[in-house]
Length: 214
Image 1: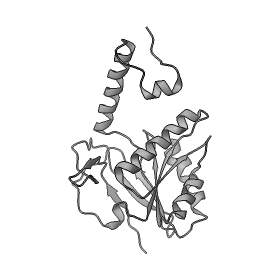
Image 2 (image 1 turned 90 degrees about the vertical axis):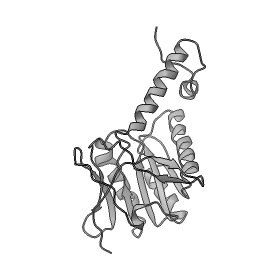
Image 3 (image 1 turned 90 degrees about the horizontal axis):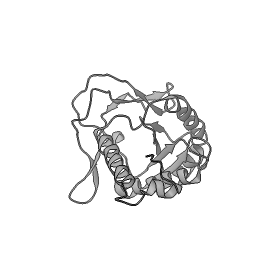
Image 4 (image 1 turned 180 degrees about the vertical axis):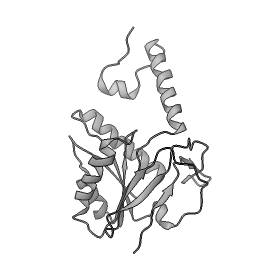
């Protein structure tokens, strides 16, 4: 099966009338580039993303079946991993939220290092649940060394035990207009808490301490 590079614009999920979640276009292209999925090697059938900053935005076009998440796709959401169990549990909570809101059948958490489940373990769980393709998506903001080197290396190693299952590594979260809203909400809430107007948020409450200074 031949594979060709394809570009996907970054788009948020939005609910439609039947409570399913679909992709909608957004004005937040920022001219920051597109996710470019490229085959790893010449014939492996595995894919990775190539983030190309400052590329010219292009209009959306119709895409084929391979460009949507199907019933037999497994999604692995990967964070860095921490020695603090509270931090690791937050990823599990996010994965549960993500699965409930997207209605994807197979979604597994993974930590790049320091904690379990590992990418290899999550990859195996996806295959055990019937995944015929695995989508590895980093729970990271920026396209740094972990995204460029470490996660691809770990995903490649994990795939060796499942040679018939192709995988894709998506771009990290990057720049998106919704991130502005999230950060602004966090700032406002923390200021209200510092002023004594509200209780500590779930993040601070989980750590047993609040990090504001007078």
